Image (tube, rainbow, N blue to C red):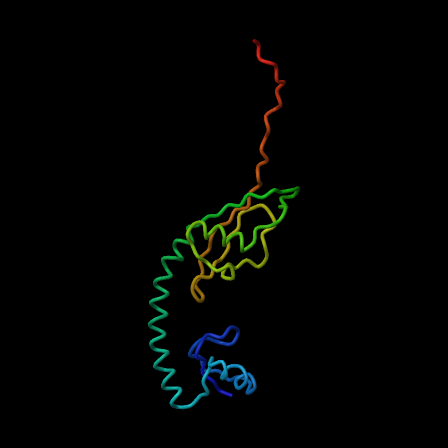
Length: 163
């Protein structure tokens, strides 16, 4: 079955794509949810007009996101964690931790857009990609450093004050 996508569908395609999909998938999932239209000459003309306006809109959005990408690329985050032998840290630095730190700096980034395959579990410097717009990514620098334990001054003998 040939369909034209009306919206981006994850793992299927982007808005405006013409695809050949299984009949059941098209009839039972895409068409009832109004995610796609069946390919007909009139639908093709309508989608072509939408595709042109969408292309202009996407270019304008891409330009507006370039500033965000540049600002994010200059960000450097540092996380202090307790560490044991061989630079293994107790706990980890996850995408949620990075999101919270970015929120404090004024960036509102969805946690799912932080490309961290697995949490950081060792001390060191890392480069983490943040998906900003479709395929455009910014890379932020993340440093995981050893948390310094506070050194307590030696206890002094308290002598009673002379009267």
